[in-house]
Length: 276
Image 1: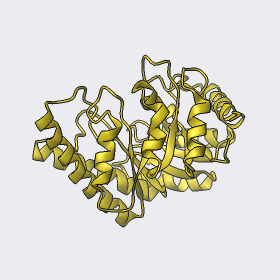
Image 2: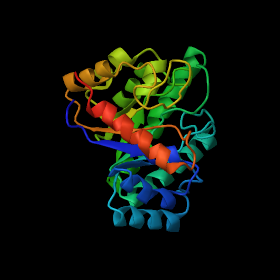
Image 3: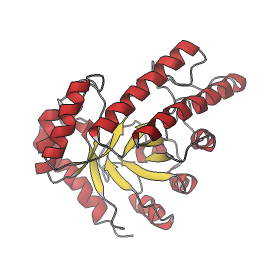
């Protein structure tokens, strides 16, 4: 395998305060992190708390590679309701400002809401155009903050759950600070994993690494599900991927931090020792 850096999302500790787990992550053998935006973990609206977290991240010697923007049904930058769209864009800009305070390099964004289904064609393209407008607004603010905005491929049952939808939005980007993040679990559930690296290759900056058994977005460690990791890593190598791999594992171990970090180290070793 290429010498890609492997980090971990703090999302596996989403029920714990971020200040309680930074040393756990470092002592568990990781130096690169993606910061989770779950409110109980880190309230990005609390400027003082974000500054404390940023200082503590530096103190413990961690590299804050990325920040995952919030996602929910009510955060809808595609909405045909102007007020909902405006509020959603404002929410993501607030998250971007927190990300800049944290000192991350990238902010990961779901380009659509957590809403199931695909509307009729005419309405769908209205949503798509609104997403393009919103992404450009957020990207402009990210550029001012020195951030790279990464669009993540979504689950197949959600609005914009097809890779071509995200590529359409990418094609509308007015700034060169917009790229993509591949979520392997999402792509596996979409049946798109064999070709998605090729589709995203020129824009791909990072990979959310997680596995599943084809029935749910389980965020299992690599090797515990049905993802063909040799194929994934071979495709990344073939298309000259030069970004980072971020383990995005479930929070199934709760406050058993030792077990969570042991699982993460095992996942990293599994990837590192994979023979292409």
